[in-house]
Image (tube, rainbow, N blue to C red; front, side):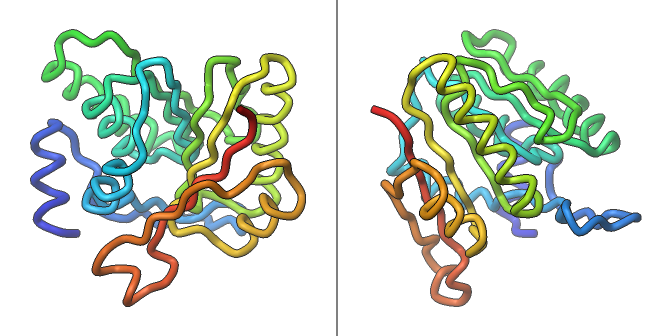
Length: 204
């Protein structure tokens, strides 16, 4: 963990540093690790969120991305987390963060459920994934997003950080999503080519 990550956590009055391996490791769910703040800074310099956007973070862990987005853009954001322990830590972070914010136009909330069981709201239009689970679960989640778009037509973005080839190939070959943006993380991509963001879009 970097000093910058600790400083950003302190500024938001949250604690999201560290990694978490699962005691009973599943082949479908990956360990908890938050997106580095510097990577988020770089991505959101060129990718803007509007007040009308509603973001869903699948596998949100302790909630770093939801708090970051809420603080920076004042947009509504939902964090989905299956781990009871991480969910409780996200709620503790929320209580601390809201004492800092005091008043906000947009909501921030967390739901404890399996990603594939989350009922995608018709207002949800931005979906974030940092390799939280297997391609099988990812496929089901994408299907749920597309079913929601059938209920209410809208443009939706799927944002991938550190994307796997399975995720990319599925979106490119088996869905109507199209790649619209890529952002390489400076100083990290040169060492690890997976250190980048991809944005896939469907709709207007």
